Amino acid sequence: MTSLKNDLLLRTLRKETVERPPVWMMRQAGRYLPDYLKLKAKYDFFTRVQTPELACAITLQPVDQVGVDAAIIFSDILVIPQAMGLEVLMEEGKGPSLPSTIATQKDIDALITDGAEESLKYVYDALSLTKRELNNRVPLIGFAGAPWTILCYMVEGKGSKTWEKAKQFAYTQPLLAHRLLQKITDITISYLKLQAKAGADTVQVFDSWAGALSPADFASFAQPYLLQIADGLKDIVPVILFPKGSWYALKDLSESSAAGVGIDWCISPDYARKLTGGNIVLQGNFDPAKLLAPIPEIKKAVKEMIDAFGPQLYIANLGHGITPNIPVDHARAFVDAVKEYRPVTI
Ligand code: CP3
Image (cartoon, rainbow, N blue to C red; front, top):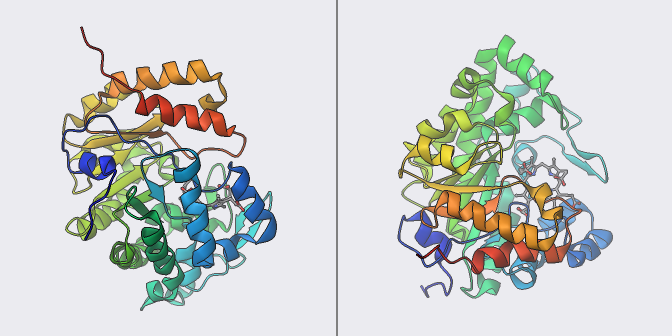
């Protein structure tokens, strides 16, 4: 196997000393790049996801055009509910919706579990193709949604600000919720293993709605499944957990078999370091909306962010996905500021 030309991300995840922190942006593939919008005008969402040549082209765009230190495969977390037999619609301007939601034991029993991950061959094909096309320039990140976040969509049937239906389900029928979470977990572990086999150098688990839960409910409905995934993959690829909003879990997660934990901008780098010691690589946590600030301010804030985290055991990233309204030169300024970073010398 040829070695990567830029392996900053993987060396950081192995806790090695690096010249500067690696940088990538959550949701960097798609959303804001003009070349992505051209493909979006031509092909519907799941055609883009299910056609390896399109997914590969979209994955490479931010590497070529913004200069990030890693590629993340273009796909979606909702391919898992699809593989389990649920229909998922993606309507422009409305976000995802699932016409048949999960409410009862019967619904859960009817989900496809045996070999569900095998129907996602197009993801593995997209990864292998992208790995080839990257030609070892930067590492390739695979991903999946965390069980709690996937449950949210399966039960709620669409996005939500409060996730009341999903929480009602978890709090009134906890045994069913755990049964569903376990099914999703088992499939996700197999799915991520197959992603690694197809070429993913590391994988991130997006628990986008973890922060809807209290610390005690996170400990019950989210954390055990995140830990199972981290344990299941630990000898195969480094795992980055991103439980958005759940800063209270940082200490526990830093003692898990995950290689890194992503954090959002609601916790300061200092406090996150205090909670985790030097135990784990931290990733984050620039407020994506701050990318709308003038470029000199972005650059200044990035430098302050790296100073606060420290340049080792650190992956520069946003605290959540980049939004469609970010000018490309502002995204590039974020990436450049990390690449230009030099530690303060006295
Ligand atoms: O990081 C990357 O760029 C890789 C691609 C990626 C997509 N979705 C493509 C996409 C990744 C990593 C995701 C993850 C994802 N999908 C999450 C977790 C990350 C997060 O932002 O919290 C969630 C919650 C979803 C579910 C989902 N998919 C939603 C809520 C939406 C609609 C709103 C939106 O844009 O986020 C999608 C659609 C989607 N997935 C788009 C893209 C580029 C936009 C639709 C389009 O371009 O046609």
